[in-house]
Length: 299
Image (cartoon, rainbow, N blue to C red):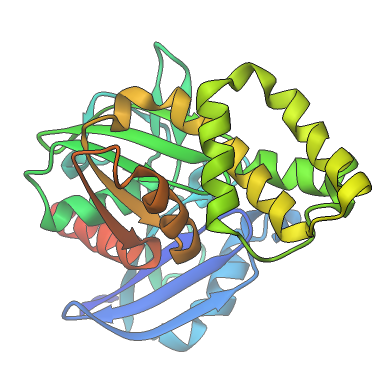
């Protein structure tokens, strides 16, 4: 079977979602997004799930290359792609090729990154980082990827030197949906003034975190000032703790934020006056560019 010239498929396969792109000559011809994340694949039917999504792009006459990253390479995914240890250069990213039954495509799953001395791991974020470094190879500073598990990553000369993960997004989810605050933080809005006051409060007295959380509920019961206030404060308290823990990564440094627009806005709002320079980039743009970068390095 002949290889399909200049066409390939990029796959970003996470815990809750699946995205794929058909690419020719650096241009995206078609894309697809489904809810077939790792945790929803039944009976380890990973190949069947992949083929179901990319079937229209497969041809019996040619074999097409599929390059994937994300939780598809985790221990709970299709096959574990061993972590690459820091410090490491993403130009030499490792991969694993699982055996597939369908001879219309081949598959490479890229490794995540691990840190041994202070235990930490990432899987998927390295692709976004590679996407940024593709056009910014001389960047020296820190990259922050806000989200469920926010990452702060030190970059020197194109190398990941070390990183720290903070469970900021997950803690917000747990506290807002499984604690006494469940009835107080129902708003979808963030009030920037309340948000920044909460960050400043934690900066000054992080030891009161547990107490100020309960104060949110008590104030709601006694004064009912509005859910948007309490959500803003909860968000600020959690980000304040993260920023205290990541101080060495951002204080007076050049930093890049990669994530979703709403989170980027909040981080930039707090950090713009505290760092040397700051740049925000949407994560959806970096994932695809990172996979292109990995593929090009293998060509």
